[in-house]
Image (tube, rainbow, N blue to C red; front, side, top):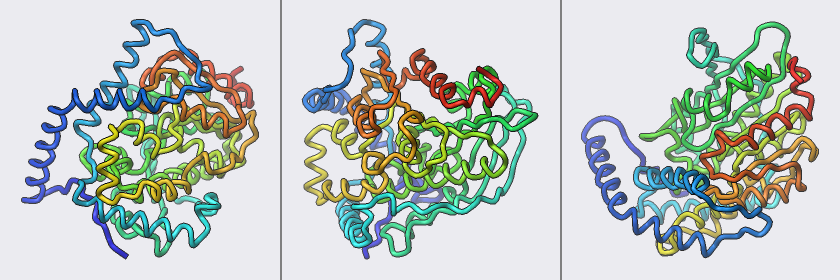
Length: 414
């Protein structure tokens, strides 16, 4: 088996200096080519746009401003993201082929739910109180993730070598007194910082006004679990074997946290994920039948389709010419795809929301999950990916999901 080393940032010494210089040169080159790359992306995206079943919207200055936020995020990501070098592409392609063969032999591609093992009960390493935070009193929990790729699985040794990622973190906001329902909020790509997560999930509203306990886990390779310069580096950087392991671990960690909350008396537990966290929420909703509700917000549902919708066609052709087999990538991603697994919750416990002008996770991805989930309650809002934070339709849907499944009544609110 060929062992492929992720070409990420290495701290310290001369290699660190070379890496820093190379990273700076890469940012400069990508920034200079930005207008061309963005233009080619828009043209390619328009040609591949699939809006059948997506509500139409009337464009105005307000909507254009929301779309501009998505484009700004994408431009900064394109300029500064850590990505796998073309030099490593051939080796990673060979590893993808090996992984696909390994998965087929064990039946995981045909039966992706069998790829996921039930995590054991967690043992807390530490619990630190933060009573005087400007975002309200919360705790910081640390526990060993315990996730390991299957024995013999390609990329296993590399993944276990990401030492900071072995420790899972979660931040709960807990009410005193009798047990209350919990909403586990699953962050998206590049999230994982306290202020960003607190704002993005409207924790003040959920905790103080609706009376819920709230827990926000830190996803693999994010925040204090990062392996690169920025949180999220390595999750969606072109090494799709690592992407499979990252997404599997994300679901594993969330399930362990949920089981721990139940063991300590939670009368109800729901999940709410945004963006990449929406993908994770949909995956967990296919593995845990006891959830009281699952809300998937602005979810991507196919990483490869996401790549194809965002990259200019010539870059996709470069990938193919470096012997990076996208058809095999599609195979191995099935084991974590919410579109390949059957939802474990009844339809009335499943909820979605998405923006009709989303430029980062195109609306057809949320539409496909809605169809796969049996067309449950869904809210379409006139906005983009980033604008979900202040969309009133999103807030109303969240409240509807919690109320409709009794979580607010149990929490002392109605």
